Image 1 (cartoon, chains in turn green, yellow):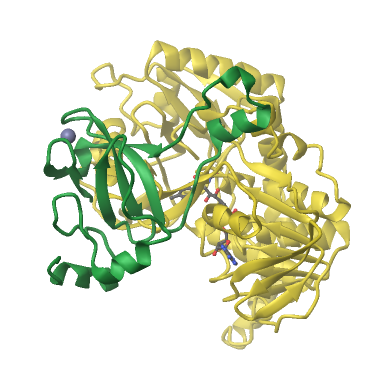
Image 2 (cartoon, protein in one colour):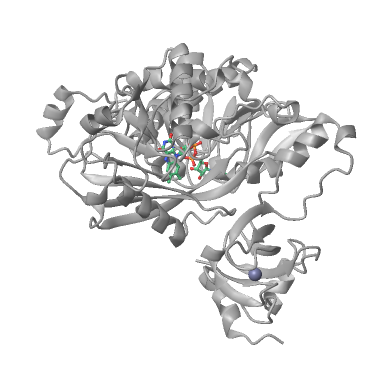
Length: 129
Length: 416
Ligand SMILES: Cc1cc2nc3c(=O)[nH]c(=O)nc-3n(C[C@H](O)[C@H](O)[C@H](O)COP(=O)(O)OP(=O)(O)OC[C@H]3O[C@@H](n4cnc5c(N)ncnc54)[C@H](O)[C@@H]3O)c2cc1C
Ligand SMILES: [Zn+2]
């Protein structure tokens, strides 16, 4: 069960208050009428489906009802950060390993490893610098 | 292959059943095959079996990173039915149902296919309209679907709460009598044993880590046990299809989600059939061993963890108790998850790709067990001939760009 930090409410709340809403940072073509079938199909149906770092949109459905983003590992289920709409992730597949070694900070400056693999749990024991 | 029969049972009893042959060999990989199948689940094994048996292609390897059937094949709730709405899907699933009927004999392996029927419940007027529409479409496609009333449902499944006092009273259902369940491990093992006997190499603990592609043509795969060559490669990897596609530079419209199931302690026979409800969102049947087999929904987020979340279990059991209040004190024995590859239109992808010789059979999501023999059969035909079989052709990956989707969200329903 996730314990999710809402970047608007500035609080950890239970997973049940939230609802996942798919891949984050999708950009709707500015002029849908002018894109090809290929581009339109890609926009509608093709999603990243990584085994690893994923940026996804969630909604705090039973809380502030605002949408926000989560960076999460789809294998360990570790939530690496939550951030507001319009912001960019600070942790990406490219820099995640480096980040992981340094320890990963969540939005409130704490650590979130619920559901994580044992090898990740040591992150909990380190103090963020 | 040693054939199983009443006679062989008696014969082996005389030697205390100590001399049965192994089900399949454990071969060392050859350098080259005619066809490589990636993924040793039911669909991959069925593909290999039919390639060898029906299309004379026996120089085949099935490459499996774990053990045979260890993916979704032996994690599902084993429901087999064919009451899908659209012609394309109805044909595919009905082709499969036809093969199920003779499968134990064909494989000389008891897959325990039991046609005990499936009820899809309707709790609202809209549900009823959908049920009627689907049943009508099914009948036009020659599928034995019918609409049943709450009184008929009571007769089919007395344990179900069909009273008006239920929170979501049952208004009717669709009933497919020829549907049912089968033993999922036996399906994987039966196809594996049959394929092995026809010369197919089953390579377990062998993971495909990349593809060998030259000038847009596939010529082999990289594995943790070295490179293996073939000019035709079929990927049948369910939840991990996207990972494989990425290795080949292909994008698939799939999302991988955990889907879980639970079984209870064994009970005396109480359920006659399979009951599914989209509206309260649960489904249940009883295995021959006596345990209630309960399927949950998917977790809404992506995950490769082969486990599901607790809120989902809770919702599922609420639904089961809503339908069968008498089960409220049954204890659950085990719970597990599988990674399902959901597709935007709830239909599978059986398709060529832009890499020549590289095919994908995936996107079965929450409901592909029922299609195991049919999918294997039409996919084998496609690999053997280099052209998609007519039943498989509408399931091309192009449909997500042409717009020719086959929307089965209604029939896929609670999934499965
Ligand atoms: C809980 C649950 C309940 C379900 N209930 C039903 C139901 O009632 N009815 C129904 O019809 N369907 C149901 N399904 C769906 C059904 O199980 C699947 O659609 C079907 O079994 C898929 O079969 P498959 O052979 O394609 O995949 P799998 O059995 O998952 O096989 C894929 C194989 O590929 C292997 N693989 C992956 N990557 C690699 C690699 N790189 N190299 C080598 N091997 C690799 C995996 O190890 C795996 O063994 C359910 C699924 C789940 C999880
Ligand atoms: Zn909030």
